[in-house]
Amino acid sequence: MVARVIPVEPFDLVIFGATGDLARRKILPALCRRYAEGQMPPEGRIIGAARTELTREEFHTMVSEAFDEFLGASAPDAALRAEFFERLDYITIDALGDDGWNDLSGRLRDDVVRAFYFSVGPSLFGPLATGLGRFGLVTPETRIVVEKPFGNDLETARALNQTLAAHFNETQIYRIDHYLGKETVQNLMAVRFANILFEPLWNARFVDHVQITVAETVGVGGRGAYYDKSGAMRDMVQNHMMQLLCLIAMEPPYSFEPDAVRDEKLKVIHALDPVEPRQVVRGQYGGGADTASYADEVETPDSNTESYIALKVGISNWRWKGTPFYLRTGKRLRARTSEIAVTFRDPPHSIFGEDAPWKANILVIRLQPDEGMTLKVMIKEPGPGGMRLKDVALDMSFADALGEDMHIPDAYERLIMDVIRGNQTLFMRGDEVEAAWAWTDPIIGAWQKSADTPKPYDPGSSGPDEALKLIHLDGRSWREIR
Ligand code: BG6
Image (cartoon, rainbow, N blue to C red; front, side, top):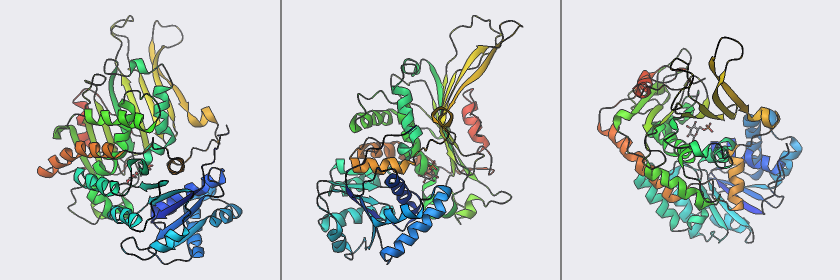
């Protein structure tokens, strides 16, 4: 299946933090791939910017090494690299001072889209926005791309929004949540709003509960300093899982326009019930045979930060009142798997008798890996022996349905092209981020005020036992992580 590639218009893209991990691992490979596919036009230009003194050639060598390290077999060949590097420049700049800014200004063209990607630590978001204003680099066709974390709580997010608003209109600000760029996450909207099948059943009358799982096998690795201040709640729930929850729970937007979609997501966040401490379980992984414990990895023996969290969330609106949403995410779990499982209620009456085995219909949307969908349905088991019922899976994997060699683009490929195109649908609006923090803050505040400590769990397990109880108390159980 050949995707239709529509080139974006010519642009200058400045990546602040170009020597950092995200730029080398994700942003530059994504751009090279879009170039290879013909979506980034030959007139597109990228300027890597960072504090490190490097020549253009030294920067190219660094990026080339990153391609080899992170893209493996799919790394671009020498000819493609050479072409791509013709469009890749480098500039040394001091985000906090004056050095480099005038030089940068001189390299930008006035008549093309201008995008500045803040791939830097959050403490530099404000200074960069101010620098762009101070050195007169902001044109009407300018956009900025802001990475997470967008604030650490409501107060800091609000202050950051205000700083950005001093130099940019909301239509120029692209707050990235890379989950929204994942093909399968966008597919959630296609499943819901391009099919008539599900919508009539998509409410508390027919849905018993929803489980959203984002499980990872990796630990915090070298990101300990950042992670230990964030924990799973800030790192995953406030942003990525919140976005998944919104896409599953929102009303149909009137169109796929940015504000139509974002308005509906915002309404979901406003309708979220406050979460009581008994509805949350936090966990922290211990050490394994050949893996360090969380506390060792972050080098803080008495760390009180969670590497796992499970929550029961309610939504108070007409559609969802009475249907719990169970969210869980964690590191060093048994398998890397992200999925959303919608479990439907039982039929009101069984014509096959009280004793007929019954399993609920479940729609599972697998986000990664093995992207696809499964619908569990009841059938009659073939053959004699009476009316024997059995649950079977209608199973669809994207790879089978769309061709084994189908390339599922990385989230950043889609999102960066959307920035150039000026399409904000898959980016978070300022009020959305603030609303998400307004819901998150009291949950974090409650365990900070109490003596709550994360429950230990074994690496390679499904998380702490207490998380099992959280859902068992409601007579339900988690889906297996595998
Ligand atoms: C990041 C978090 O935003 O998302 C990481 O900071 C996490 O801690 C990552 O590992 C997960 O992303 P993905 O795309 O691998 O599911």
